[in-house]
Image (cartoon, rainbow, N blue to C red; front, side, top):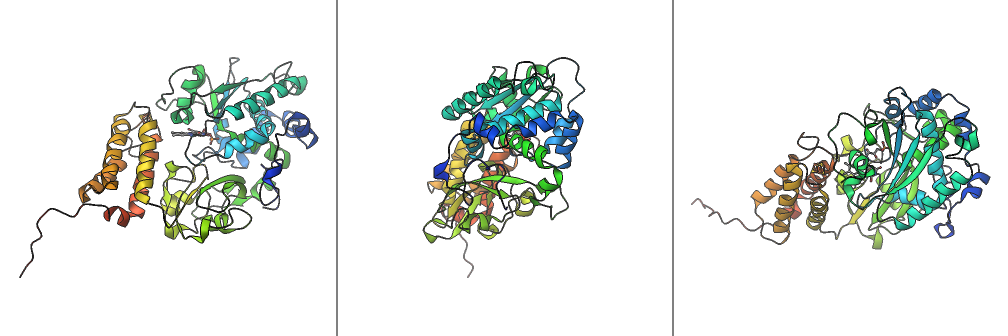
Length: 446
Ligand SMILES: Cc1cc2nc3c(=O)[nH]c(=O)nc-3n(C[C@H](O)[C@H](O)[C@H](O)COP(=O)(O)O)c2cc1C
Ligand code: SF4
């Protein structure tokens, strides 16, 4: 990348010194070109804005990579009643902290994307759903929303002080702090004030979402991409990122990648999609190498739900092909957690399993019971009391949980499945070394 797009106003290596970061308030945002994309969008037909986002193949940045423009086009024709946008800032996936950067420092970039999406999709109300633990970020966003109201972006006679007769209301909704509320239908329930229990799909939210009305759920970063897309167009957008090398949909655009773990400089970096993991970690522009010069042992691809990249997958390109090419669930949030050679992968698997066990909402038996059982078996193996059968049991349990095997309502169980299964498969020797010696008598032939 030659210049930052999403972090244009957020000093980030290699373009700026993170020590000089500050919240970009409304006046500074406008002085640096902010809300011009909204002005341009409202001068366009709504349908043309949707077509533009569709042409860009803006793949969702919340985990699943579903194209935003396509999702928007699933909305039914307006019927005069309310339609909603829910902005997913739950960000409770372990190792993921990229949306926080945008909210912390450039909240109006996100609000501009929200306003454009509401115009394009003829949406009246936006709920900014923010993770319960993000106390500071909730205050920053609430302040930015109020600034946006005061300056006529939201409310009043219509967008941008009545430049068009389309009023958008925007509310901040604080989550109570459960991971499952980030799943889009769990989020809808939570916005309605209920327990965050995911819903069976279909119907999809675009048809029947919050309060039973058509609703778009988009990630914070996805919406932050919308302003720059409207400003610069699809040719410019497609210069960022990469084509698929396996005949799948392309991975266009810049992407925030939050790297944590055993690297010299952890943090959020903006890169083109497709950057090799090795470059992200080794380059002095980004993480500046493994901590203490240790060897790379593996990395969680992008949130623990995606599973791990093994020691021989250091060259993996960080794009939406990664799942098919490197036996992980997908790119997820593109926030890798990096492990060095000293990491105990049995403990990593146990830790992941504990997370999913604690966060299961309990509606589906394979997730509720399977997660608990899997944790118990992994603990047994970690403590040296496991047998070979236990290892097979863990794999069997993992493989039976999730949307992929068709046994659960939501994808939380798939996260458990992929996290544990890929760790066991890619580091099997480490697990086997912890197993109890077999008690079955060995027959020695004479
Ligand atoms: C258990 C679980 C947790 C999730 N948490 C989040 C989250 O915190 N933020 C997010 O944007 N998407 C999260 N997702 C994905 C959402 O369900 C949904 O796909 C996403 O918000 C859609 O936005 P996008 O298309 O812009 O990526 C989660 C999914 C699952 C299964
Ligand atoms: S898969 Fe797990 S988290 Fe998702 S609905 Fe079922 S029990 Fe709840």
